[in-house]
Length: 564
Image 1 (spheres, helix red, strand yellow):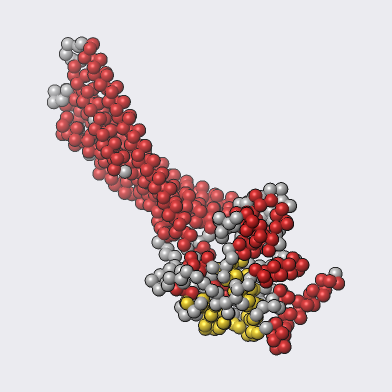
Image 2 (cartoon, rainbow, N blue to C red):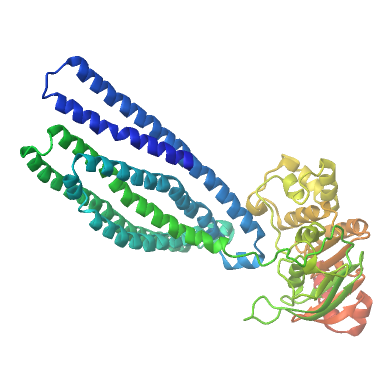
């Protein structure tokens, strides 16, 4: 920025010499003319133009390139900040809106840092140099030429406010369009299966027309702004021509001085017009920066703080004391008064009806949401005092909704261990009963998956997620209904392999299939956020409660499936 400013100053210092050379050349025409002297003047004008061009090039090479580098850092910082945000933040801000802020809004901020600053500095320096030279030629003409400046300042203030307000509306509407497009593409199979393409197109068209209307509102103000600036400059030129003509006739100034003065005035035309353009850039940039700051000024709500302890290793003992949790103050608690003791290396199974709080428990164990202090402990240390990196490195989590990246199968399996060997990846895939299926693909582990693994079945996606978690060799494995899309025979094979794999590792397992959980060390039954039953499989059957009811219904469903 400093070097670029220096180039602007040097470039303008060279530029202001040109009218002086022209002045002397014109005044020289009234004397005895020598071709040699005229060639010298002509050569000086060319040399000045060349020097000015070189420094204008350098000015752009520093300031514009610098703004691109700042944009790069800014985008990385914004992305890094988003990586720290919790699930709660992303629930409240649509993905399309975030994408719009990271692209369109960031480009507007970059325009301020590049052309905005460059032309602002250039305008200030040009005005300073040129007005100084104009005063040296004719203070009277300078005063006349600068008379419209207060009107220009007033218009900049009035139009600037309108530009800022209307550009904010444009960017907000663009966020809605981005969100709509992102949701539609992600859910394209649902749209097609319900034959809602026409309805979605009509909705998208409506959003687009609203965007057009907001843009037209902005353009009307912006389009009026530039002619106004031209008009004010035109008034200044007319006044100078009128007063300057009189001064030439009266012999107060020479023709050369008047021509030089009009050249200096001409040098103010572009900065004056650029001033209007720069005001627009700054107003757009500040409107976009306000939108970006909504993200940057939102602190991560789940972080390591001053109470965080130095913990390198986790054994896997989990203790839950009087845990009550609600997603917001307005909603009922998803979990109520939960008390559990899970020994390191044991298997805890969690069952219950849909909405009973099973997945919430998983989200709290991974600190996707923060529990109240003193409610969840790992190895007798409050989970909130364990470094997030240590906690999550020691947890293998397979969520209910499987997510795969648009990358190779190998990279999806090794996502938690990016430097894993090929043999380790294949071993994990073998345990998850997906290795043979992968080997049948044309490019095997190098097969590129579509968005969210769209070219795989639900069961294949779940098994790749299981392989991803197993590869980490975590001390705590959390399975949130991880085999719901897998057939019974494959499920049995996976369970058989997992039993050996989970030796000396703690496992918390949610499943709707009670048959998968019979060998767990302990089973708890959740209902409306509370533990209503706990014990082994046989103990719970003897109670004849909700667990027994779920078990009997599933047995009946399996018997009916066999009959079919």
